[in-house]
Image (cartoon, rainbow, N blue to C red; front, side, top):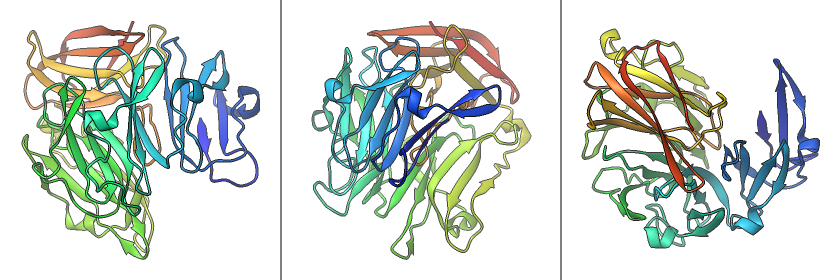
Length: 386
């Protein structure tokens, strides 16, 4: 378990090693003791594809860090790799946006700073956000009161490529991945460019129609509680379907979808402040027959270890290449968090599916498949990638 703290007494990072259910503080021997820095997004990712998890840490008030893991000892290689960005970083997410076989990173910046899209070329990172069309994430450029808090990655339009959504201080942004390293701003066309103060985005197929829906968390700041939104994906736009009971909540700084009650659909966990009772878990009351049209998919390495954040999961109708769903193994989510939850996929049709996991590493995109899989709300598919 890694925990980040506000600056104060002692290290702003703490690493606890799990030894059979007892947690031991190994921060100092691991080389992760830092006396300063406003910690924001930590992400465990195998950046160098050597089989262990490295650690990226975003900071709001100092250069970001990338700690290479060498048998449990961590060394900051951000300056040498091009990731020691001194802009005010808050959120980040890792994915192979250009499909060249390694993990790239999108970083969210505040206080008028442009966002960064760092293309990974053999371990050297170059900011190509401007050329890719995602430098400002849908908000106004160079505005000191604007910024991006949380970037999220999902296949919004169902074409198999992974798109970017940005929860902003300012209008939110949606950018579809058009291939060849380019994104298109469709924020207004998809009805998502809501102006406000937002700090979390979370994708899930809440109705099992095969399209990812979106929850956007408004923040509480300056005495104002900016409202939350639940957007339903119609395939060409997002519709606001937020229940009045959810609009009344003073939720902020945290939203996560997970099937807490194991009934086959994803429920919603919210944090927040104010007079309403938070945190809360809101149960998804999908009909049982529809909830059963789902799968949980866990992507691990050949040894069964959870070292595959950033891996891609695609689900096809069995025996065909008709894409039903695409998901990403979590590499940064909620408000500056990351989970080890299995990928949850809802299926609108097809009683059996083929599941394909892609692990982008060392310049290759290794594919591992499970075929002719029957749907079941309680079934966990484990895919051991190469």
